[in-house]
Image 1 (cartoon, rainbow, N blue to C red):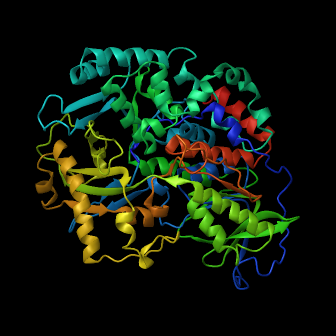
Image 2 (cartoon, one colour):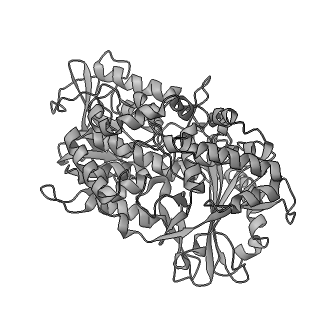
Image 3 (cartoon, rainbow, N blue to C red):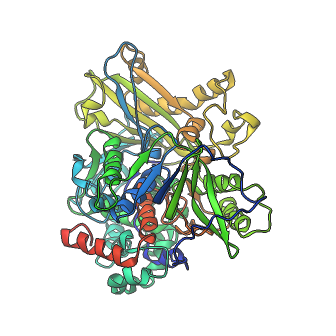
Length: 622
């Protein structure tokens, strides 16, 4: 969602939810014949391949798991249905008619922090671990613009700028926007949150590289034991809604409550009352510590994705290179049963190729998609077998998990002539007086050619704008074949009818209006020679990113303030999960952390500890 993708730390007291009794015995290679349970497939003319680890999905979580597994010395393959890696963070190119050079668009996240230097960001730590962190040239900058549509354009209260760091610039912006009491309230709250041993510091004490989903985590976490104890009662605050933290420290003024609702929504697709305090608490450090900066990768987000791919494909002693295999959709999980215990031994691709996994399969697909694929892997989920029972457990987990809304996207290539030299790259456009979760209220905008002109033909800008996790999928679902999402996104399962095109035009208007706050003549620019306009709907988001109902990610179940996410462990031995529907949740650092935990779980704790020691010596791990 908002691609304020600041650090989503590991909330330490959530660790007890993440450590399950994962079987420590080797995964069985037995292939029993359970007629009536397994989906039949004739693979007599197709090949089998032997791997240690098979990763499904080349999103950030999947690539992190795959690259780290390869770093651990496991022969690893990552299979991806799309023709490019990156998942929601992939990049793509489009050319205007008769143009020789393409526009390069980021499809999703583009506002990052904690990436340009060694630190506590889990995604940065993965890159450091696999040896490709220095492959990326980072462009650093110090903030973004906010446009409050509660005020008419041109009003002095209609725009303000979040400036990172601790030099007082942000506090001055608060005072100009909301008055001296608001500035004083923020300063007091920030000082409380960011004090030594305060909530912000406590939110990032244990790195994901120390976590795993089995009981041997007591060894990998041992060196952090005293820090863990030091958290004390703060743990309950970190895993509860951020509003409780604001209440505890007396932050009651209107502007600051609105601001943190916006920031929480930018991180999770939920307001502060439904977002865990941990990610917001750490984000305050990322934004307000001395010298804090934001980061953008030169060459676009694909530079980051390719660094992860190189980490996977790097040649390593004894195992050679890992492999990323694109346009390779998984048809089914290969499931066996031993003593009524379900076991995943690998996967079968759509072309019939069988990928056997000696250590395990890591699934980066969202829980809803994984449940559907598991159901398609057996003939009858109602069968009284260990396999069917395990699949039903996964389906129950998926059914109990609520989801956030979807997106409208617009990608533009427009002439840059006449635009201000000091135009910011990132902008948020919303009515702060309205509910931040209201449909189409918040629009996020990025103009990455501000930093890297090579992303567009000479004299042009690339622009990406989207409504952040607030699109109601029900408005679009009747455009699908069958009138509902069956859990399997196919290339041609919806038609571009007049009704679809009309709805698309109607829903895009909010994006145009938001963009006019930044570039008033943008519609005229978009019609000029050499310009390009690409619009994506929730159905586009669902199709290309394999997102069930086009969702951004999980939301708290009914009756709960915040989400309670499953760990990497699933009810099926040898099948682990990573991504935003398992601990620790949404955001690039969060899904990188989930991939890290899954990879850690597949190796002996001593191997994990050796890597941690190496990284500590290099200064890459706290």
